[in-house]
Length: 202
Image (cartoon, rainbow, N blue to C red; front, side, top):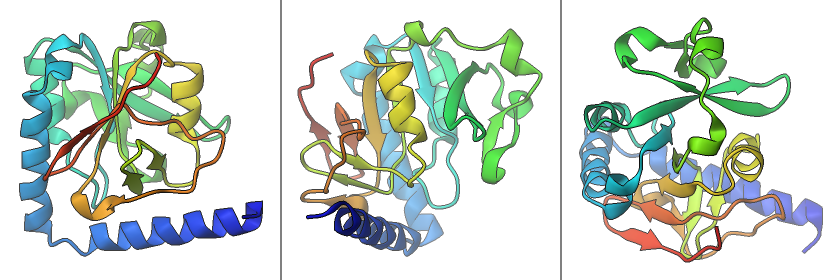
């Protein structure tokens, strides 16, 4: 498969998975998100982590508001991504109060307030758990993002040793995704129906 055909296939799979996710009724997404959150909070990887980074859910993504608060209540150091589109990078910033520390940022997604960036920037070397969204996931540990490559670059450069945990609904899971060299594989995937785990050298 040529590069153009591969990218066209990835775009098609991305659109299809996102359409299935969008088709879930709002109440259904909330219920499924709650099951995913409970499964992650009960998993040993959560108990073992000290510095967690997680996305702020947007549109039809698995909701992370309750998970973010649970991380703080558990005494974790919590980082939330700040998108830097000019350099195509993510920067993790520590927050302690979601109601006060977050504001609409890139594409309207909740991000840390700008005044926090310098005073609360996380040392990326301390991150041991990264919780991330995706458009689609497969049963071999691969993730298809939204096309910007922000998380792939972050995981490769800033947090290569962190545990990578994907959150997705069952309708986003396919048997196998076509991958590119820069795609970063997951360690775990939580859906409302199952937890998938893969072995990766870290």
